[in-house]
Figure 1 (cartoon, rainbow, N blue to C red):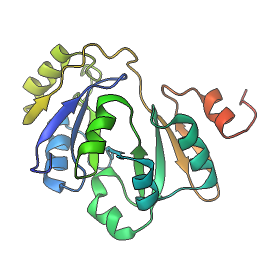
Figure 2: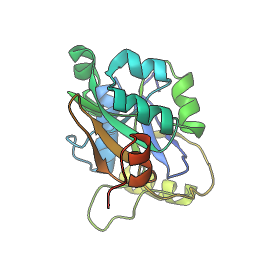
Figure 3: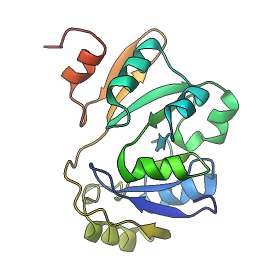
Length: 198
């Protein structure tokens, strides 16, 4: 990926197309292949909690969520510590970035890469297109229809969950659920030590 290559990796949720988060050309090729608006940032897959703390400002509640659910199926919207990082990695969002610390093969890739990884689901972002790929046949169909110049697609079998990351925004003055996904709202509230919403 350090040479601008695109790779597709399986997760328990679905297959993700990935590249070097700091390579604007590689990120742009993913957006173009998916027909995804560039304002809709990709997720930054962190290699470790140390890397998350190095690059982002974590509130006390962000630390609670990370402790409860990472590595796992949650992404946090976090502010960059350094504005120059936000500029360099703008394809994953600035001044807020969408950050996850992933389990499984995607997490292993992030831990072994010499760059930060940007990822998004392997599917077209257009009306009436199939949802994100959950098996290799769907990945191959996505590559054929999108023309994505993918160097490697790892066969992880069928992705059983077929659901999104839960997204939580962690601001200094407020923590709010942006999107419920694999991690249920009640679990989020429990980790934050708040009563469940009814």
